[in-house]
Length: 352
Image: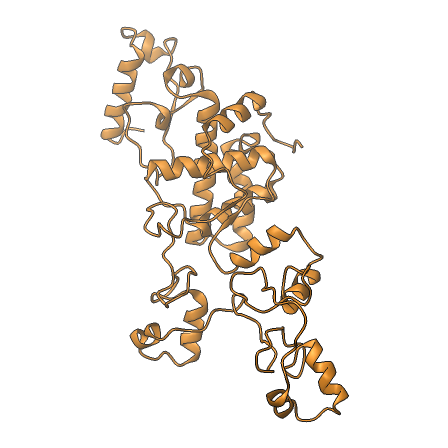
């Protein structure tokens, strides 16, 4: 797909080969989840909630967003005591209610009873369900197979069902997607992850590569919240490669979204990462150094060795000064290394 104003991406096939060759397996995934065993990763790490047994990302006062809301609702008791209490699992990870008949582990359908015991209860004339359940006998037949979800130990209604009755209903309500993908989605519910499945293949590989480069460089963080905004911007742009648009065209496109949603710190960081991603992908395609920069009308100083550049600031640029420029003709011809040294001196003295 080519949009008005897009710049054709030269060497698309060659770039794809380079991306595939450069990507490591841990970054070439459709859903990127930070390593739970390395929460202190300086780039991708996410510290977990300090409530025992909760692996959701920390947001406020050492709590995940769910436990923070629960703490607020409890009128903010002593935070240390609140953290010391083992809270019940958060919504989405709780085991569903089981039948109230002793020894029965089927999902409670209604009145606290599973489907089988509810039928027996109705034939008994609808007595008080709690009293009836306390005296009822457990079933002697049926499946004793547990639900496939790790946080649910209820029995499945049939041996060929992967889930308990409640989770089977949830699976059917979303039109029976791929079984393993549904399980993976339930297991990561509430955790911080970056889903890249909506992106075209090459665009996905390009963001994979950018995340890998940021991780290896260790110069700035790339938490999931930032990456998710970046993926969203890329997915809604309609491009199939970050190089389909120039930096200026990306800036214009992002500015339109920024005007509607406001430019908070999160959005600014996401925009910055998208420009970083475009930059490293272009460098992978074209290479870096004077051989690449010299023919350009504007030299990108961040791509020249010997010049220091902060990754948190705008990429510095310099109008090209070639040998046929008056400033070069009047004096002796400089080598590329001498030009680099002069530009570095100018930047140290604030000359743009």
